[in-house]
Length: 160
Length: 292
Ligand code: FES
Ligand code: FES
Image 1: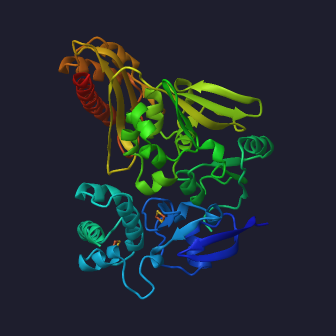
Image 2: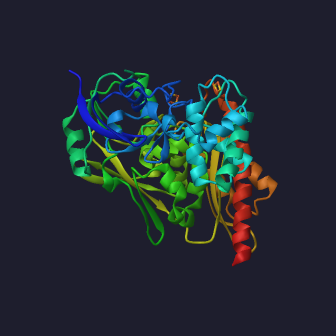
Image 3: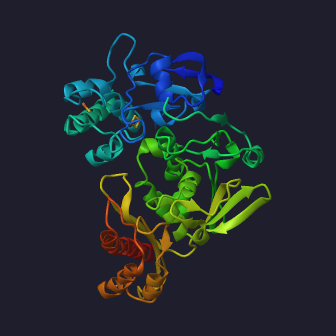
């Protein structure tokens, strides 16, 4: 007999009510139940950071959170970063400008990590950026483009 | 689905929690989930019941006293890191938190979870040892207090019965002006420390050690206070020779030996971390002194 609960969550501004099995992770809930496949699932044990989302504004790993724990919470995923007219978020635009991605697997997690970080620290040093993304693994870029993108986005966001 | 099936419970009070713990067989407590989550996903653990502590509001607090700092078990690591009260009373805790995982894991991770999981490389138990913490545990027969020195029974095993739960921890703050430092070495930022040392030190008017506390993580099965080294250094001027003699005391410890680092290497590293931690703490103590 599976253990089920009804949960209510707001994802990227949209309210959803669903009945879920209690052992369903938030990452799988977003992808399989809501079809929001922008959140990537890499290691599924809290190491790679690909699944990072914002839970009530704070970056968190959705592969080691249960959907039932998000009941009553506001969630933002990478799909919630760009404007509805398709204009990219400053962090996304900077990734494009600085070759901050190659295969794109780590990108949603990187961007959710960096947007939350810049909201707290609007003028970080390079060292602080590297520390902020230390929990996100990228196997393609060598991180240079990602760091450059984060620093550029910080500057643009300050100016905006 | 990654974890094996379980029945989920989310009590709203410590009373309800203790009741559940007393009545359920093979139950696991879910705090921040940053260590338990992976273990459930791997099915290393297959509890029949998962009791989520995240909706028990009374377990999250920071209460500074005259010379204590009381912290609720479900207080998030990130909350501690940003707390002015913590920075004022136990700044070494804030310094150590910068090495605890990453921002996203500290947003969820809790001090009680870290103390109960008791990974040998965990920083927060090391800080609790440094500050002579007392832990409060609730169970079917009420609450009891345990000194941090008695908390670690063996590898990843705290002094906790299956029907008990850690509810809070009280750190003893140092009243006198002192320097502090928490220094560790890991293969990358936020990874498990191969060795780490916490240090609190108060100096007298002649720059001699009046009081010193040293704790070590990542080397022994549970965090330890380096009491022999503390004794050696008390009254000393922290010159190179004194620190060398203190570091030599680490040689007597039984060290963890695994794929990440051999015991010999860990102990050697611990000596280096010891020197760095004392150096930084003493420098801060001197700055404190010159500001008086
Ligand atoms: S998929 Fe969540 S951290 Fe790797
Ligand atoms: S772009 Fe491929 S993993 Fe980062």
